Length: 83
Image (cartoon, rainbow, N blue to C red):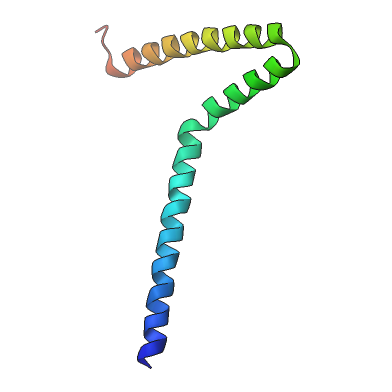
């Protein structure tokens, strides 16, 4: 009887480890997924057309600057800094 209980306890430890690894992967994909996707697109364009990759990289930088501006405006609106 003790042997059966011990096997289940060890199996449960493996399940907990697997769940923690899965959670870490999900968090990593959420945090880095968009950046990795953009870099892979740049790399793909660089292999096919150097000028296209350069243009795409510039477009990403422009979009990032616009996103920062929008985020700052949103933060101001949320905190009512103007009042």
